Length: 120
Image (cartoon, rainbow, N blue to C red; front, side, top):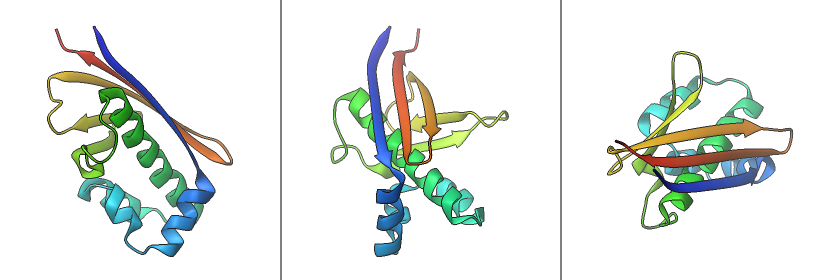
């Protein structure tokens, strides 16, 4: 049974600006594992897309659970990739739910959708 659906869209320019203005912006959004991968990226645009995608995914998850960011920290959620490169999401306290996630980018935006399903 579906327990929640969330979607978020973010402008890449907004994320890029925040990265430039606030040295620790990525640290506030990314877990240690996500940050380790982020630091391997050498292309500034790809870094912006990656961070924007994770930001949108975490916002979408918070909307799906109905709490919003604040009651749920960005650090409580983690987006990794499977062996095929598809995103996977986990969240502290939500180990008994299945989390489906999709992230996409365009020239100007990143968007993420999350569906949370109760495990049988």
